[in-house]
Image (cartoon, rainbow, N blue to C red; front, side):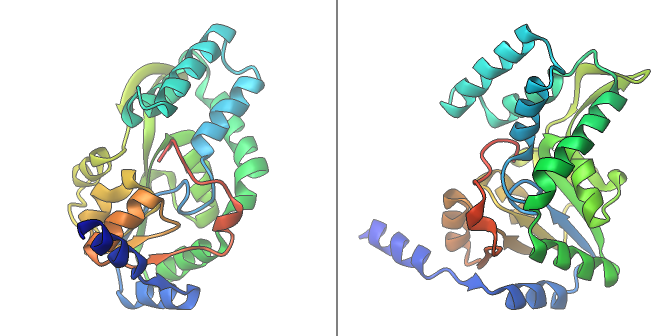
Length: 253
């Protein structure tokens, strides 16, 4: 009986149309809006995509690429945590010049991720910026890729919170600065002085903690787990037109 009630409640969750979604958000008049990135602003997993591409480009050693491949397989099998793998996917670049990584991130995003930007989300961010809202991006994908990506949305790097390591004298280290995922996203928002953002947008269960802290939560392109959580909380959701043409984000979110 309980399972039937859950299924019925899940099936009744409201899916917003594009026009309804943008009107709902804009009319809520948020002063601060926080967006997850992979799967929310664009389709797919830019973090894993960049890691695999950078390995193919020879940016990391063979031994490091073999190690992270093994770790990522263990992550997909459920033996390595989301927080651990997202941190390690940044640490593998230790010893490289940061400028080299920034240039690589720009090339990768332009070629592989930019075509997957959700047009409706770009329009929404522009509308919010026009209304004077402060826009933040929070992601567990590496900051080089995220900063490059949200540049397309007019979001400055100083409003990006993402997986990051320390850089000393232009050289990347393995010392972690932040890995915002799950509760870590909420912790990061509180740390920067945003204990209750007006609006939060996310696509996966790893965004739930920051969605829960928002005045208004807006699931976008939700995973099955997030859709279940949204149903339990009485939230609606939005599915961008091109979302079903891209792979769901797995890691980096």
